[in-house]
Length: 132
Image (cartoon, rainbow, N blue to C red):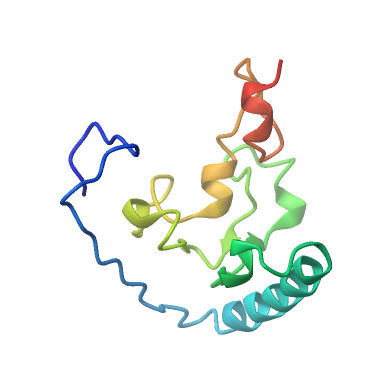
């Protein structure tokens, strides 16, 4: 990991080489789902700004609940057993990859922690965290 505190305005001698390892055994549907979402996004982006840096982004997987009927009625399972269990974006989440429940590599578990400006859940969105 880079030394702390990190100052993005200063050039650093620290360099990182991040590598993603595909571990979709048992979840082979994940890459196909991501490919379809990438195609959808590229089509939408082309209509707005074909030169956007986001045209280079590649979603590697999607994550969704498999026990959807249990989310509201089972406080111990608020995200409904996500599948695949673990997934991380190597560019945006370089240092949180792993297989530790509630700590690393789960879109839904992380976004389940999102709150508004008060400690009230904000329906998986961090956008409301700084709402005024």
